Image 1 (tube, one colour):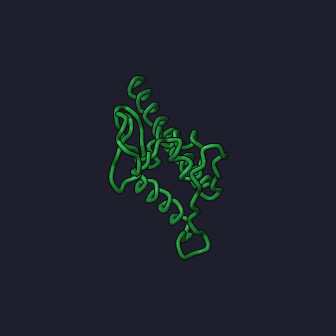
Image 2 (cartoon, helix red, strand yellow):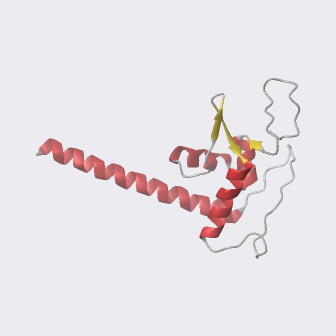
Image 3 (cartoon, rainbow, N blue to C red):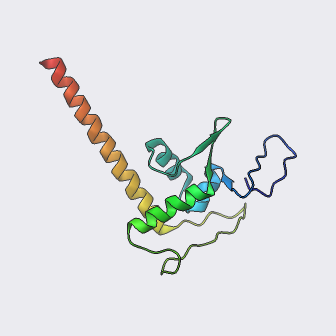
Length: 134
């Protein structure tokens, strides 16, 4: 949802000078698949969502800081460097353009978080079994 919308219907939100994106628009903004954004939300390793009427939305500032954090983690400068920010056109009918760098970095983030959670789960399971047996 964009701030230039008018408040003629009750489902339209208007936040002055703040862009609010649905999960589909947020994944398009980041250049990743919507499923990958949903997995990052489940694992709590992605951009921080906001909840309005039990629906998930993302602010543009949060998406931009998440994207810049991922890119800076590998030492690539986005503005003024070799990797410049792409401004994607807001076309409804076209397939969203995937950003290969952000796709790889988000896959690495998901993999690290999933491995960490599974190792902690196995540790807790082992402690539980040890307490039961002794």
